[in-house]
Image (cartoon, rainbow, N blue to C red; front, top):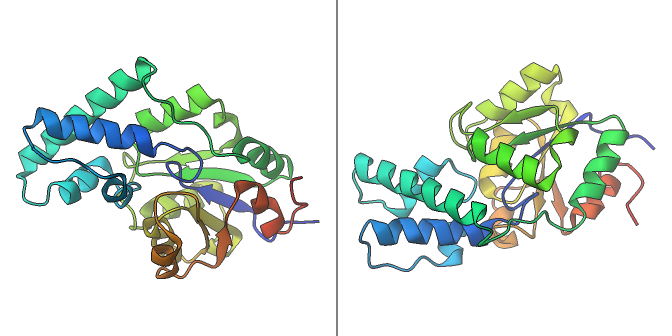
Length: 225
């Protein structure tokens, strides 16, 4: 069997890595340090996961000045690193991710990541969870404007030499799906991440994925048992 795609591009947080708890905790601590008497709900933070940190904090603090938003980002980074280094939270891979990546990679597909994380944050995940070997191209908020701007995907296409019809964008938010559509490629929405299925449906993904282990079968490869 042969895949209908040559290039599979993944989001990271909420798609490959279950990181919402750590993100919420770090964002809450940043707001506490800034003197905001406000409790962040998981659902509120889930709505901005996938954006760059700057855009995420602009949405969390819509009335804050640019300097205050930048301060929030800096505090978030400090808390996230401290907590992660201290083992106070973990950001595990979702079930089936490693086996799926192994199968896609061994089948000759080119794999890439397009994420709103910083490159430093992404490299941390790749190193700690030991899944960086599968990816040929990494694009982050350091390389291009925030999602849903398609620039990250266009850079990946340019660097890998593929065309939009060769590629599939896999993500858990409407930012991912709209980014993929804007780049002219097919899209796949995962239902176990940050945005709910009803919200994702509004962005009209081409495929749906309830379990990462189902991805090979979805694109024409033997399904993982």
